[in-house]
Length: 468
Ligand SMILES: [Zn+2]
Image 1 (cartoon, rainbow, N blue to C red):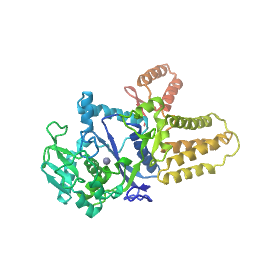
Image 2: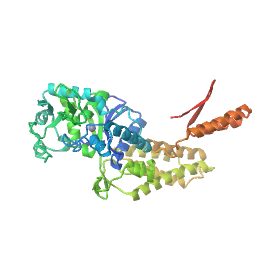
Image 3: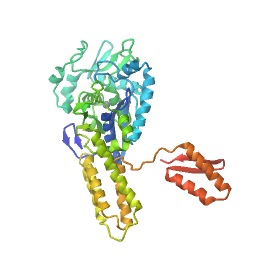
């Protein structure tokens, strides 16, 4: 894995054998997920799936920022949720609930699995207050009026502050700011806790003031709560290389004296026509818009066709290529099912070869485009020899399914089944059974099973569940 801190490719060694503890920065739920953020979430989901396939037990935590993310990413500006809610005439928490639901729906479309814990910032303010107190006790913070600040210079001397970003403190100190904060010792310091003006959305009680935590604090406190002081992998978008991740790390190390994460992974930017996506420029696409036009699976295929660290330009043309690629895989699987095969022997070694190639690519800093190329090349060859021994063909299809599954591409994923239709069929099945036509009744049960519906007969009649 390429570790941003210290900017080197390193062999991955987890702290505990066979277990991976991973934290990735999640969504601020004030707006629909745009194609850039969704891309990052798909990569971390792929990493987790791959590690699980390799036999690791993965504890993956990804937070949800409901409130607390300010418009300028640091400690100035307005709360993003508050600003969006006001614009739409909504209660902030009503906006959060709506966006959260839309977020989960989008992630489902992209086949991003639910995380081990998805902690919400507002549920962890006591933990954040605890972290601030630890930082103060260890001498890396100071209180000014009702605010608490992190002393970046003090920390830098002991642990190095912005090495991850390859920046030195003088450079950070000299950066232009919206406004100078006269309470700070140095302008490079950042807020851990801010006293809230009366109209501010967050009014939490603390030993310092009624106020709210700095945005960076939630990831530190929640990662440590659910995964321990030091974790294996910490991921996020490249925009987090400064200031979010150095701040997260500084808080964690200052609070515990332990290193925060062993591997820092950062995903590249997704641009549109060479420009950073922005709403005001009108070059802004939500994942939802793209999924509606194509499909979640096609969007996932599009993402994985580029390496996660690479910046890439979003284009509908590439989306069409991704869709065509998916089609080729589906066609291959369908042909294998349709063919009667023949007697020729297919070089079985190629199946093992594909697996090795795939693993080799994925082990190389999660090189999904190379892994996909191997699968596509294999399909191209296998397509030429569909008159092979059916058993071998079945194995070939199986490995393609398996490896695509590792990438989160579950080809021919089941369409949502309408519960009313299931009920209708099952009533029909009851009738057949009453008439003693058991074979036909069983046929309905078996076919539903193929659609992922499991029928259970009880004393009171039937019920059904969706199989996971
Ligand atoms: Zn974070």
